[in-house]
Image: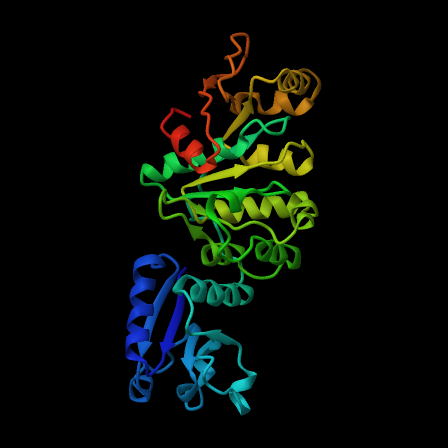
Length: 335
């Protein structure tokens, strides 16, 4: 179900620009109605209801907010907010449209109950894991996401590593995934709507992603149930969900393995990696439960293990200090 938004401002140019961007970039999330005069507000159908409204100061003082679940003040820093206006939640007008929409949907998601996912087609989930660090999990994960995006699919990449390297690939220009963790912890609101609002897009590849956590503990304290809820919500807002995992194998890891359609275990030429993988295969009960989902990715020029019971994909060793170049190059290979 789309969020019904009212845009009420006398600034015709701003209203047109905002509504056009919403129709282009957020049509699957928001259904916008624009009013640029008080007369047009009065002409709205009797009983018209909106989930959220962006209203400028002059109109806010005259509008009947009874038909709006969440009225937000569209505020310019040059304007004074006094009296009744000062009591409203403010959304800054002069900022990126994506930031405006993210703020609006974050506020709205806290009020809206989670919707039933019975009729929602969920994403195919690919989990990228390794028992060893430094093998190139992130570059493989992003290569898969880029490949899926190039095929015209809505590909969402999330990193659940406590020390996320997302910023090295995309920068840090949006809302942190920590806002999602907070909603999961409070068990109130629509997590899927929040994810739709704060996800960012990489223009070069089309990958959708969630920005890194605010701090290490935000990922570290997630419960297994919260991870399950997070993955379920992410799977409802994309066609392909790619999960970049940490190297541990705890209850949270097992939940992701359970939910995943495909599990890529990444290795490299290091002897320590081979030893750790062998221990996982022979001594950990999780391996037998997920073996049918596993594809081994021999990364960095590692030799394929011909004795492996699982399918093996071999990737070349790309010598470059440019992490973005590496994953874009790997996206050209069959994964």
